[in-house]
Image 1 (spheres, one colour):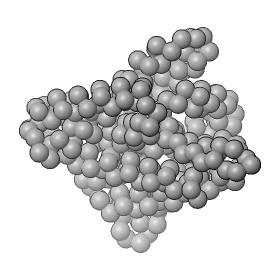
Image 2 (cartoon, one colour; image 1 turned 30 degrees about the horizontal axis):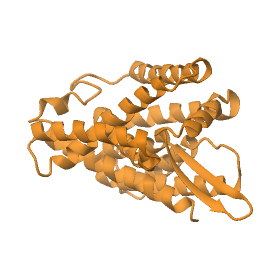
Image 3 (spheres, one colour; image 1 turned 90 degrees about the vertical axis):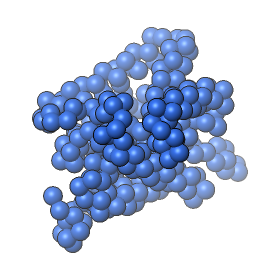
Length: 280
């Protein structure tokens, strides 16, 4: 349980941060033109299956690029630059949201950028900042997707990603290679928990940032439509993650986390719907 509890806490904190950040972005939409630029889909533009294909293609290309670097690039500089932007850019959105509690939006933007860059530098210097960096990045990306697309769009997108995650882990197994390299380099693309067990040694469990941001996307998307649905998703995904961690603790195999997380989300939505708490 010592190894599971930190991961579960990190997962919950990321969801709460994502919801909080989205609420600030929603409130600032009319007044802050920079916030309007965070929306991935311009207002009034219709959603289509081609949009899902486009986003999925970006994920495939990003994965292919990382695998290419892992196989052919023997240096470290490109990984450092890549990680710097993956931490500084999304985390600056989280820092902006907290700054807005006190400061006007222009000052908050500057504070967010500055703190985002500082966090990325600290992560490079000190491994302690790896989990906070991954949590903030996941919360921000989940919030941006959530404010940009409708719940139905995100549900379809998550189902496709869950199928891909299953194939990538159990069939092509390229995600296993990628996860191994990410863990080896201790990149902020996972949250980690470690514990030393007498006579056994160190045991480590990781959860990818993509698995963390999945429920955040849908929670945020429902936030302005039916907040009760967001609550059901929160509990459904958290229970699913706990079960995943329990299975990981019992085995040494890599389990694709997204399929059970998405299944837990859909089950929680179904329960909320049949009990009358959620409407579509």
